Length: 547
Image (cartoon, rainbow, N blue to C red):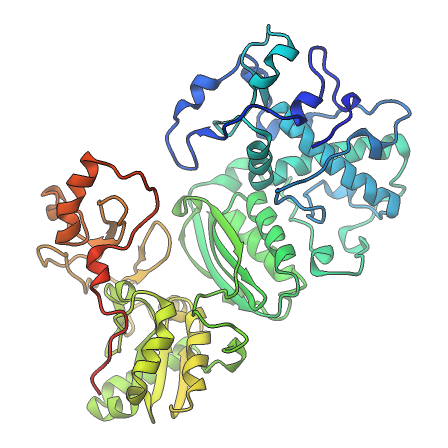
């Protein structure tokens, strides 16, 4: 960062201390969802004077008389995810027609807003100490964390405070407009000119939530959305940035995968926030006419179902392990609506062995998903990852030869490319799959042919549409279908252990981990990453079915 000293004048300290080098170290204290650590000990005497994240929108810094706004704050962004093209949620009355000069001023205002936010979070260990002496003791406090270097605070602000920086940008732009008369007329958002270029230059503005109360947006009671959309994405980076800004704007948490072949996500938040999210997705030009409201699967939950927000760019939006250029979603099997699938399964089950010689009802999920819930009469491969599915097909070609295959998964996305891979072998009589997955089927047929719980990839682990329990406790064999993580450090596999066995201390995924757990607790290893459980290593990677 490089700033001119007159950008943020203060009686005792220049703006350079906010943007210049700080002490070494990094973030201390608690992370997302963690307990406060040593951060409280680092609290400086100015911390109680610093505005909160939501207070910065009220700051309207004055510009030096006669200065060109573009020269007030010259900043260089390095190693940050905050990009120049990111649309920020400033007020609708500022959405006016920009000429080239106005766009430059908007960029300058955005940089200045970012620097102001960082400056507001700055504190020193001893305010009585002269700046020259305490320069190396400058640090920053934000979100109950202490940051001792500029790179870490910059990354934190870029990742978690887009909305706050946007509000500050709005205040600066408003002042520039008043002083320089840059914005001469007010127009609606749909009249805002869209410069030609890549996708990120055409991104929709974030929804206006100024009329929505904070409690309504952050309410713990809400929904979890599950969705995907296969489409051609020319600018995955631009879409990724828009998704981050949108989710943070609406206080959503979850996981979103973006690739050149589309988007796949599950996010949770208040009911109001998820409604805004769906509306924003449907109005985005990339998804118009492709993504429909009915494509969003909903269930009771909220932001608390996820530890954080993770949005990233990948080669595939679902990890089949094969390049989309080799196996494309465009070669998928035939979609069956929940009603059509229900009729097919009913016919399959009613004909017994005769139908099963001609048809396979195939569960495309992992073994721990099908263990607690599945369609009656299905073939559920004993595989641990979806990326093993192609190998499973290759090892069992004779099983599928000449058969009609009815496929299903949680929300439908795995079947899209899984069915495409199976079709590429040219051995099946026909490949069909359940549109919308089990999620949509249970909405229409809660007491249909799917029995047990539906596994979901968040901290709920399961959702239920009936009272059936089809799985058992790992240790005593009693009916039980509520997963928990293995208690052994570095393993963290899912385990079914009932309350009675938990009270006996049986909380690991297998006897090996049960013995290893107490030893690791006494001598914690230095590594922090997960390792594959020993009992999982002995599992056959891809089973060969008996034909």
